[in-house]
Amino acid sequence: MVEELEKIIGQSHRLVFFGGAGVSTESGIPDFRSVDGLYHQQYDYPPEEILSHNFFMKNPEEFFRFYRAKLLAKWARPNPAHQRLAQLEEEGILSAVVTQNIDGLHQQAGSRRVYELHGSVKRNHCVRCGRFYGVDAIEESTGIPRCSCGGIIKPDVVLYGEGLEEETVSGAIQAIRNADTLIVGGTSLTVYPAAGFLSYFRGDNLVVINKTATPADRQASLVIRQPIGQALEEE
Picture (tube, rainbow, N blue to C red):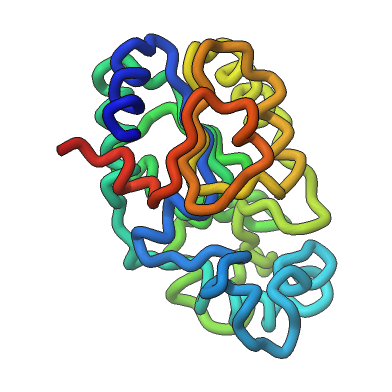
């Protein structure tokens, strides 16, 4: 399977990678829906409720307590999947990464063209004056992080109930539409609207790398049932 994958990569000129939480689990960041994911842990509120726009507005202190503990993951480092994708971009094979993750690990590995559909923990802005803050402003604060103007510093992540950023969506769709190969990795393809982006692919090879079945398996040229870092890591 991996040999076939390498053959497809070697023949590609406009490869796009579309990834989800499974890409970062090998860096130690838990996903939401797996057996060990956040949805299977116990909190006062369900994670999906905490990570909603309404909850952020009504109970920001509880939001940030959960956010700091479970989503910042500043200690995480890129794994072989992130590193290989950055290498493929450097070689001129990979044209873009489209990710549902918010951890910034693709950029940390060296990828430059990354469409972060759900935003990033690395970017934060004051909801009042718009001033930019890095991740340290959240991590090193307690309670509700405040700007010097008194406004709340909000992470630039897309919460439940919020829309995706239009420019990011447009760029991601255009990259997928122009791709000759699309590798889908580490995602169950159940989160919309992101999962619907695959319908824009018109290229030659659709590759799915995921430990469990996905809705795209039937259309795929190649399906690999193993961790994404293991599949992409060169021998």
